[in-house]
Image 1 (tube, each protein chain N blue to C red):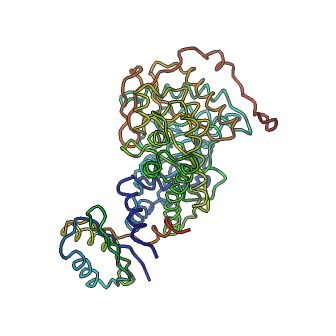
Image 2 (spheres, chains in turn brown, cyan):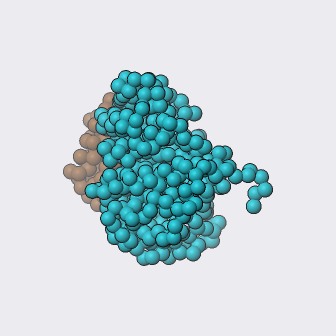
Image 3 (spheres, each protein chain N blue to C red):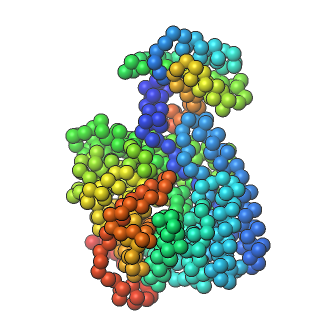
Length: 89
Length: 454
């Protein structure tokens, strides 16, 4: 298991989740958990994914960021350890 | 499992509050390069640095990508060169040659600063130490990336006043040789008391002789994160204030710990320490002075500032120590003037003076840092300021440092622009009365007594 956290933040619009999920499916990335909320009118989504079959994670991050630009949202893909370290003792 | 609010909090810290890892600093021992032949020594130094640090920058970038956290600087510190060059260098010019090799090695591996053009003379100077110190002005004028530091005192040994006197003159000479760039050379020169062996921050970083062959040290940052956290507890009492700082410092330091471990693993070089520092930059919202204002003083320098800084410094340590397995370096809040927008504003408003800054250094992690003073300040006055600051460190068993820039051709109130992370600053007034007779006495100030603490 190689867990990454994908966050999507931006104006809500039709098809955000569909486009991100399509990309992930095409790249053999398994989604373990999705949560979504609207904060101050902004769409916020977090996905926990397993990218064990992805050889080049940097490329995946860049492609997801590019996909975000197309949709008009900001997409980050970060290793889960940064959040575990900061929020868990 | 991590929840969405925690993820959003972390990303807000990074994107809006300037959370970053300030530096991954690779310490490299050059003791095994020592040679009596200068040319051979130069080759060995260049090969050791470029060999050990060849992957430093690329690994730093990969870690940035993996965690989505900016790592602002990748840097190198080396064994104090006065120890390495002693057998080969016969003149100051020989040491300048070594500085150029260090500069070239830093450029080759792609780091922006390399520290360690240094001498440790807290009790006395060897011939080699003197030659290196004499070479500092030329070395800093002729290189771009090399940083220099001289440790002139310690709690155990007292203060070497001969070295203090010499350093006043060396600062003046460095200012003169780099006058075309607002005496920028002085921004790369630090004079220390109780200098730590494992400091990752420039310009005072060097790789101490007690360290392993190579080691990874990481310096964290995050004044903006602390400021934002404190803005949510305005008007609350000191208990709430301190708890908030501690919790925030914990989170910031954990990121440093993660990056340090990962860098160590990927480079195959042992992890040394995390330096738990609040290191400001000139960017808006990345200021230690803003935290002091948020705590409740109108400007940094107003009455109450020293107490506020003492509290801040202590809580950062308390929160940070638990977040990292090994803590070291300078650890605490930095109060440079030119690198902190809030400090610059405080000086402009007349709220912050050199004397108040000196008082603040009694309770924070470093010292008189990045302070522009008039270019016509006498060398003996610079030495007097250095001696005062060293005495604070010596008596209080803490690190203190001086990084003053006597800007050639500029007077009180004029602005000086250093550029980038070094920022800009108004020239501050210096007490006009002389200390020449004091500085000219020669010899040492004895080590202080370690009992009868009052």
